[in-house]
Length: 500
Image 1: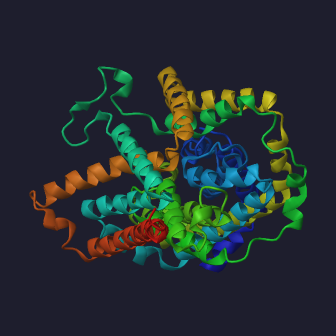
Image 2: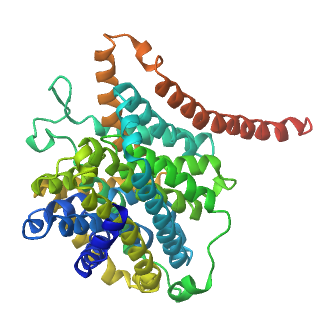
């Protein structure tokens, strides 16, 4: 069947569909506010007039390309093209400021390729087995998975003062996350009777404001982002930093596992990968200042989510995330019902689609390596031209999500607030983590207590839950020991001082 699938995939029209989809995905991912979900959803009507396989290849290419494309503006402009690129912006933009934007792009595209290819292999080889594993996760595990991500807030601090500010930032993100309608009781919370807030604070406009608009506001007094022409050619001259392999591998594994879990997404995969990399790194003090290890883990993580999310989608009809849900709609439109028949009766088409993911990853790898020097030129654009253009795309991206003028207001308020938070030393990364993971933690916690009839032991009596508690322990203990060590090192010099 694999041979027949390869034969169907090698058709010129099939290859063209993969190429067009991947390049389009890179372009969509590179535009703030235009997510992979939106791109795949808009493609579904187009696939009506195409052969089922051609339509699937087109949507799969867009999915892969958009996951990588979001890193380009994140690195060069601190404007994540997709929510999954937020973690990449935290390390990529500081590298751009140091004249290392081209190198950051190179790390990004290679890590994205490895993560995407790894997850495609997992999808090809063990999809049905891993899909059953995904079903073993219930509300208690989703709550604990959110705690794993929130535990990463502790690792964002370098001292006691920054730890306190990181915790406050995370708490602020959690507070913003509960605005809207309570998913369990249906009660309205902190909406001030504003109908636009009944569904909560829209995540993408908030993200655009926190990262994109805030950065443009900070650049208003600057002449240029990076006045260094070395940025344009360095990607060809400077090799990849050594030791990134373990971070790319970690991100690939974490991203694939998170992608398999129904309802999870690439944003969480990227942040979890980033936090694990920070814990494993020997250069923790460089995180947040332009560490390629963070880019490698985050990009491998969000691209690893691609193949992982398709495992429950194709085998069980349960979307791994919102993009997979849109792609599932494309399957159903053509009468392709997920399940055993998809791998037997329609096996040639299904395996051709899976194999096309490998080609899509190769396409964006080549495009990324060849075009990175040209992408890097964006960083040499005068701010007098760059600021209005980026702000225009930010406003359009905020509006396009829900066709809401109110979302533009959210983006502007978040942008101004982010500037104030940054100036006072608070952590935007911690705030974003709280905003993303808050709803997941709340829903998982409430549903788990309903399942357990109010008994909190439900969070401890399953093997999957205990494994997640162990991961939380590993994420929290090292930072605590480091804080104690730093505190003692400060006390020792004072103790050694002679008495007056």
